[in-house]
Length: 409
Ligand SMILES: Cc1cc2nc3c(=O)[nH]c(=O)nc-3n(C[C@H](O)[C@H](O)[C@H](O)COP(=O)(O)OP(=O)(O)OC[C@H]3O[C@@H](n4cnc5c(N)ncnc54)[C@H](O)[C@@H]3O)c2cc1C
Image 1 (tube, rainbow, N blue to C red):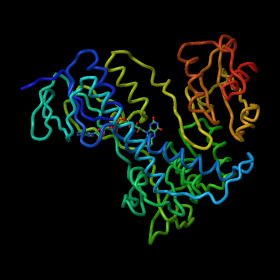
Image 2: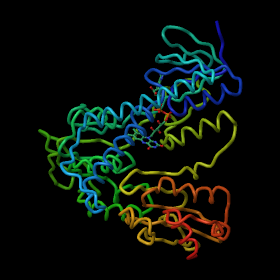
Image 3: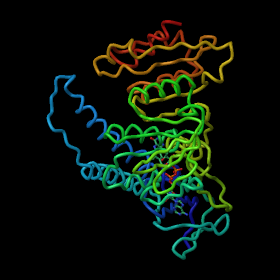
Image 4: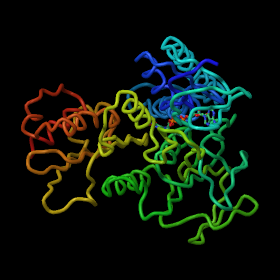
């Protein structure tokens, strides 16, 4: 029987990254995937949502084209083509990924795998001998009692990707990354959106000023939201919240987090969402790199990005964690010439500093998902505020907002 150095279960970002990196070091790696390579990220998460997001942004921009002097008449929306584009994007990326995995020398078995003992994996009624087992089995949408997914009225983040037509209204339960992103996509498409959040503020994990600003933006965009509230009952498609509010959405999207899929077994390492730690693709990839290369990394320096309108991104210490020794500086996005050209003046860049060092950064802005990396680079490499200020930032950009804010310190 052929023996392998590593048996990886799960072909998502954690599994394929660790597999390819170990194979490149000359290790014999076998990877088991019960569905499709790319995992949640490529097939049901990051990528399909960003494809929908892009289509919805184009639609929303075109509708306000007249302010840029572009008058397109009778703009129509063909949702089936939007879905085709999403599927083509996934297929294209998956083909490249399959090729990359193959070229790296990882042996892939498409089957559900289970662990027999610490050196044996069973798949397709065959036993595979490995020196070490790595579990990268991911996660699945969390259900709520009384709101079990039926794929028709009560949807998971997987179900909503399979819709063949847009509903008129959607009630989103949960205002984390998935809920906020779908609020943007759906409202861009003209769907009536309402969000219910159990916590005191939207995006409970964010800096408090960020949460409050997003609430203000939701009000401006007429996206209804209910705080300190939750669904008490659903009867004949009527949703009653704890507060007594009654709603009649065409669909409900339950986006209250994900549960790790992590079978109890003798696997030596568990990576990615299966750990139940930070459930983000880049965390999974970074953890996989750390495992393969044996390098530690700081979990506090994992950036968070939420694809709202505008984007939200942060890293490091938050307002609510600050004591009086920290200093905060906030620059409104309206201060940036580029934002007026793009008609994207909403948001701010906030930096938390102490003794010439940056400890936290919180951004609501167009391009926030990229901007955050400038500040992450500074934090991770101990670049002082004084040194970062010496950098030449191009004009007109959103990045020069970082220069402006540092100059004010
Ligand atoms: C709607 C949505 C949007 C998201 N957007 C983002 C985003 O913008 N940015 C971001 O960073 N993250 C995002 N995420 C999170 C991201 O998708 C996950 O953090 C990431 O996919 C985790 O990677 P993983 O390899 O740990 O697990 P997964 O990607 O879930 O992969 C696990 C794989 O293991 C396979 N598997 C499980 N059990 C077995 C078994 N017994 N045998 C064989 N195979 C098995 C599964 O089929 C799956 O392919 C999003 C998630 C969702 C749901």
